[in-house]
Image (cartoon, rainbow, N blue to C red; front, side, top):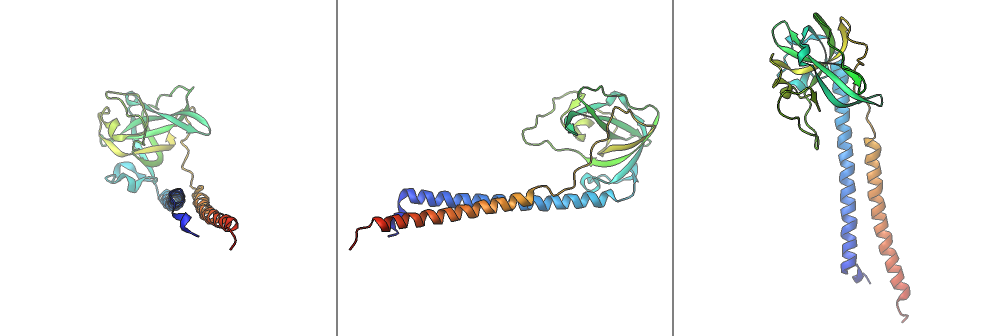
Amino acid sequence: MYRFLFRPKWIGFHLLCIFGVVLMVYLSLWQFHRLDERKTFNSEVRERSSLGIVDVSTLDTSDPLSVEWRPAGAKGKYIPDEQVLILNRSQGGVAGMNVLTPLQLDDGRAVIINRGFIALSATPPPAPAGVVKVVGVLRSTEERSTGQAREASGELTEFFRLDIDRLQQQIEPELLAVALVAEVSEPADSSTLLPVSPPELSEGSHLSYAFQWLIFSTAVVVGWVLAIRKSIASRVQSAPSA
């Protein structure tokens, strides 16, 4: 009665169902893992954001990721000739760029200041002259994502990401291993610049996606059982009577 289940087309059907279930369970576990990562990220951002403002020149930045997202301040003079733009940024549904200018500190080193966001149609404003005090949030360098273009060699004014090591190749003062995303500036920066939006501290849709994949995998199992039962019932009905 059940020998038909071992025919080649049925074996292929079994393997297809098994593959589908395994894949969907894997995708579900991956979404749970992404949810855990998101919760950890949100917790770190909230915890570090609650810390007091620290002078970036006194901060140990040997491990940039350990100080990312904490408030910090910097005092120095901008190096306007070294201003660059980070392309392909979007904020509030508007495509634009981030304006980055190094700020030279009293000890001779410099820190990259992300002064803010501007729309593509706007002209990047010059940095304030003289001694400037900036308070903001620390960010680490950005890694190149899969498929993202590499920057060309030589001195550039436009970049695809905040790559501090790459910026160091064309900026003479030693750069700190972190950048500072400006929130407050004294004297005030140009009104053309909009503060860079903070990260959204939500859990996203990972949990719902995880359950969806489990539901889909269950549907495959149920469909597999029903297909077998239907085939058996069909054979029983077509079998000759004794």
